[in-house]
Image (cartoon, rainbow, N blue to C red; front, side, top):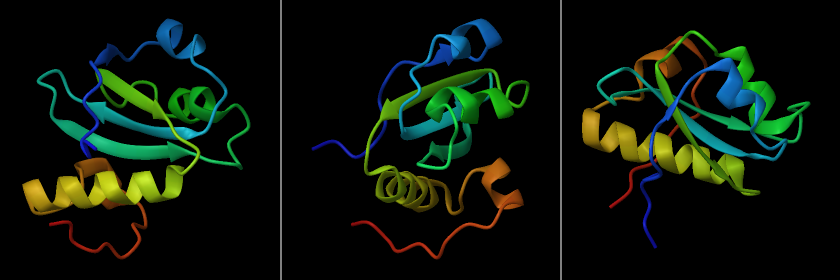
Length: 106
C-alpha cells in the first residue's frame, strides 16, 4: 500500500472545485512548483464534503489533489506525518491552525 498521495495535480480554480463530489476525504494544496502548502480533510461536518472545504480555500494555492476516503481523520494525520518526516514540519498553512500531536512513520 502506498502511503503518499500520488494523484496528479489539478488547477485550483472555482470551476474545477465546483465539479467535485460532496464526499468525505483528504486533499493537498500546492504552489506553482508542486510544493505542498496545506493538507486538509472534509469530514462529517463538511456541508458538501470535499467541494465545500476546497471552496473555503480558493485563492490560497495554485494546485490541488484529493482522495475520497471515509477514514479521513486517520488519512489526514498520516499525510501530515509523512510531510513532517520528509520536511521537518507540517506544511506552511497547517502551521497557522491547531495540528494534532503526530507520531512518526517508519
